[in-house]
Image 1: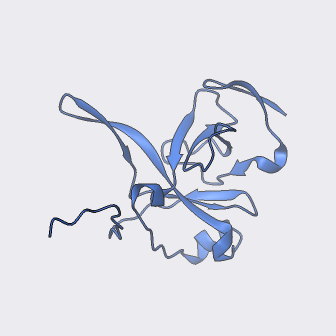
Image 2 (image 1 turned 120 degrees about the vertical axis):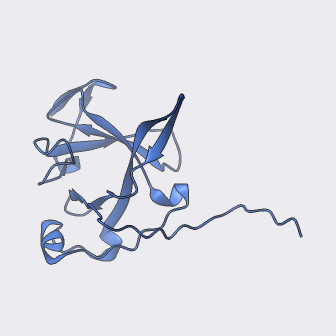
Image 3 (image 1 turned 90 degrees about the vertical axis):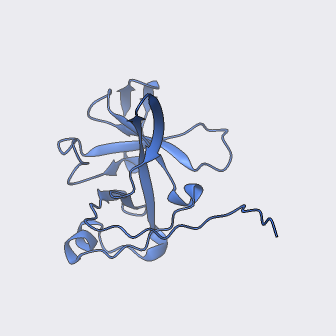
Length: 147
């Protein structure tokens, strides 16, 4: 099927590549169907565009949290596990939505740490997990020692 998008114009989307978020995303609960877009020649991709198939103007930049040094340890409720169709751990990816935030006169791009996306890559179904409490498990790499 062909889909009109704001960022990419008309694109061809294979129905087996559609990711469904049965509950939608925060603030966009009525939009359920999305596709992932990235540059074909980008090599190892950590960042994608999550494009709504129902509203061409809605797209989110998402990123693998490992690319930012974050590691999630998430516990799914029975309802969340059922919604994701009981995936095996290797069938699940966790992504973060990036958003523009203003800090005084500065504008920065930051990940939404409290509401990661969890996607079953086999079943092509996902959810946005809202976490009331958040304990970061941050892995820092490329640190230089001054000793």
